Amino acid sequence: MHRIKILLLLLIPGQLLLAQKTSSSLAARANPYAKLDVRAMQIPDSLTTSTAGIAGYISTHFDGSVEKTRAVFIWVSGHIQYDVANMFAMNFYETNEGLITKSLKTRKGICANYAALFTEICVKAGIPSYVVDGYTKQKGFVDYIPHAWCVAKVDSGWYCFDPTWGSGYISNGKFVSSINNDYFRARPEAFVKTHMPFDYLWECLYYPVTNQDFYEGKTTPNPSKPRFNYPDSIKAYAALSPAQQDIAAAARVEASGLRNSMVFDRLQHLKLRIENSKRQEEYDRQSAEVARRNASVKVFNSALADYNESIRRFNVYIDYYNAQFKPERSDAEIQRMLDGCDSLVRSARTQLGGVMIDDTQIKSSIVSLNKSTDEIAGRIAEQQDWLKKYFSKGKIGRRSMFRKITWFGIPLN
Image (cartoon, rainbow, N blue to C red; front, side, top):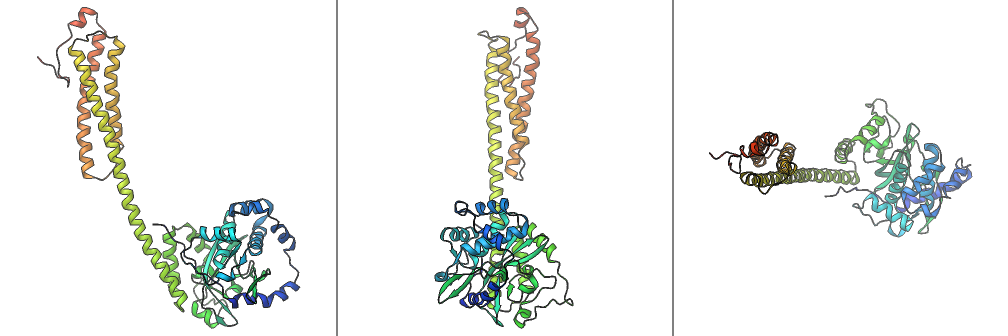
């Protein structure tokens, strides 16, 4: 079962029109990033088929987190066209990889594509960044369709980025590319006036705004509320497993109040993912247990094969002994016959010692096989001692040493 990254997305025409109305005033201002922007737009096309290529270029041609995030923002906002035709074609189950691949291939996308692409390039360029899901407000009106944007750590602080709203606007049903700097490295206390995350962690505020506060326009920090150490919380969040992240996020989403259907839907998605993660964990646990048992059985069978081979070879040795080492072989050959038996027994014992599993059947088999290897090892040791004496004697002395024995080394009197 694969973990599904659910992105709540989409930007309605009214949201894009906001950029149109402010673009003229922004154009009148001097752009402090003008030189950076020119450089960012010059990334070779050959490198822009993957986020790794774009990030690699930015990492080597731009210094510091401000320059790097600006380069990412400008490249994404300047090269990805808003996909007006598919602005309502939401796919909650599309993965980040799918969103990024599609936008790089078509050079189009909606908010989820912009946000996923921005965050992926930032992360690969060494800038901590996260996609944020939430909803927005304009002119006092709370939009009814979710939106996606980003937060990234610039120098020592966390800032907000909306590469979708920063890319341009819609005019007469067509997208017009026009960089809006209001949505680059925005301060969280200003950004929360128009952008409300489902999870208040991504407000990046010490005094988070609730959903009800957002509706009522009460976005000014309220020190009478409990202080929320969001930098430490983000650090703790990053250290969690994906399933643990969902559990923590669901608790925060619920605590902020289910003010609208978008928040409720987001919470339900999180809870569904949490449940799926639990099922996946149980499946993985059972699969791991089966794999461990199979591995133990494989090792046991290998040890058993070595033991059986040692018995076979020892039988060959005993038959040769009972024939008083006829036909004749060199002392070294005779010694190798017994050493081979000994080596196989040692191998069997070593393998059995590495089988660590809480399985009654396997444990019982291990105990039995260990006992058998101990017995054959003892018989082999007796014959090793006998051979030492045998090799120390001359021909007459050697012939006098033979007594017929069974395959298991027990003398027949």
